[in-house]
Amino acid sequence: MGFTRRSTAVWHGTGSEGKGRLTSTSGVLHDTPYSAAARFTGEDGKLGTNPEELIAAAHAGCFTMALSFRLAGAGFTPSELSTTAGVSIEKQGDGWSVVGIALELVGQVPGISAEQFQEIAMAAKEGCPISRALKAVPISITARLV
Image (cartoon, rainbow, N blue to C red):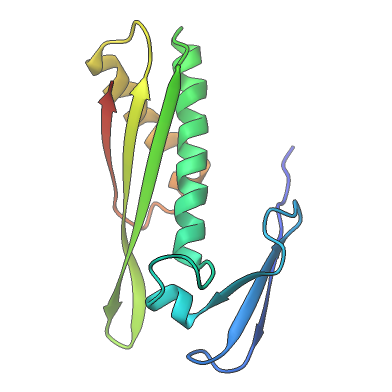
């Protein structure tokens, strides 16, 4: 049994000067603007989203949920898990490439040792569906208990 999630991109104009809008079935994205300016120069997010930001959100969300499931399976209930995913791109030759993803995890998990937390976090990183989909890209993780 599986399922498919969908989003639609509509673009008008050239790559460098055009603009697009993204819409997802859930409505979380609804005519959300994106453009080359949002992607390459608008670091404050006010110009709209970009594919790398969306990959980062998907990866942070998937990894954190996978970690929560794994912690519960090991008998731990997290008070809070917070993951920031940074997707890095670089110009390589004639185009741009995603060259790495850094996951930064901070967790509050009563009763777990730092070693157990690291071990379960690594397993979640390797096993979450988005990590598996992005396995061509180096993925690093730092995990810290507070």
